[in-house]
Structure formats: C-alpha cells, structure tokens
Image (cartoon, rainbow, N blue to C red):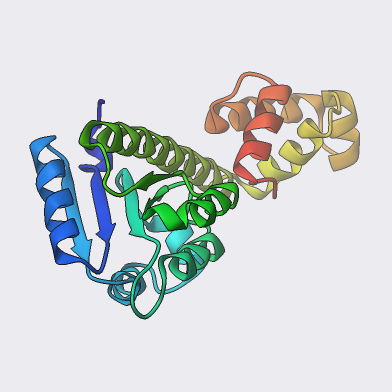
Length: 224
C-alpha cells in the first residue's frame, strides 16, 4: 500500500486491557512495518483524543491527519469498547478512524450489531495474523481516502473564502444556471464585466464549467 509522505505514516491504535494482547499485536504490526500505539483502556484512549482534538468539530477537521485505524476490545473494565465506539460515532470519526473490534466468541452478535452501526469489521480471538493484517490494511486505505477527501473539501472552502464579494455574487448566479446576460441584469453590470468575473471565478475555483463548479461546491458543502 502506498502512503504518500504528505499524510504522514499510518498508525494503528490498540485498545485492550490485556497487556499480552497489546504486546502481541504491537509485535505483529512491527513485523509488517506498521506503527502502533497501545492503550490499556477506553479512558486512556479518550484522554489522548481529548488532548489532540478537544471538540468534536476540531476532531473532524484535523484528526487524524495520517491514515489510522483502531483495534478495539469489546469487553474491558470501566468504559467498554462499545461505549467508546458510540462516542467515536458522535464525534464523526469513523471514516478517518475505522474501528475493528476484537471479540471473544460470545461477543460476536454484539460486534455484528456494531458493524451495522458503522464499525469497519470484527475479528475473533484467537485471530489469524494474516487475516487481521489484511483487514487493517484495508481499514488504513479507507482512512487515507477519507482524510484526502476532507483535505479536498477544506481546500475548496479556502478557495471560496478567497473570492471577492463580486465574484461570490457571480458564482451564486452561475450555479443557479443563469446565462451572462441575466447575471449582468441581476447585478446591474455589463455582460463584459460578468465575463471577466466568471473567468476569474473559474480560474480561482479550478473548474471549466458551471456544472463542474456546482458539483465541486456541493461536494465540499461550500456554497456561500
């Protein structure tokens, strides 16, 4: 799997109350050239998350910044894996931080229900090393795609913010499907001036048509 340097190295977070399980997983991941970070419980992981992204909105905008996934034990003392999972759902993190549950046999129905709620997958203990790493690689690919999509949306919003007020006026009428003559009438400017604003607008937004512009804005939820 190719991991462009701009996103940073992928990392696998391990949340399991059993030291031996975390150690075994960390060794397995090292053997496959994957970084990992272990936590003895949900509370420790949440403390890390709170330090990196104190608010849900901040988490969605900035964390994780490199491809990531979470291996999460279902049953743990204190806060359970399922409770932590629901908090991650609330934060909107599941796309950029896919969750793979680690389950005992009796927890399989619970894990299946979590997958329906958005978990990436579940793996039963004892697990097959190869099968687990395969799932982790796929989860990291999903994370990378989600982060890149988030960065693209942010870039579009920056471009919109840098438009002049008149360019925004023209943009709203362009995506409404109006021809230059009607835009000129609505804004009480000449058709030639509309053409100049429209050209600059398309150049700044890096599009070649009104349809492309509308789709770009819709995809980034960036319509002013």
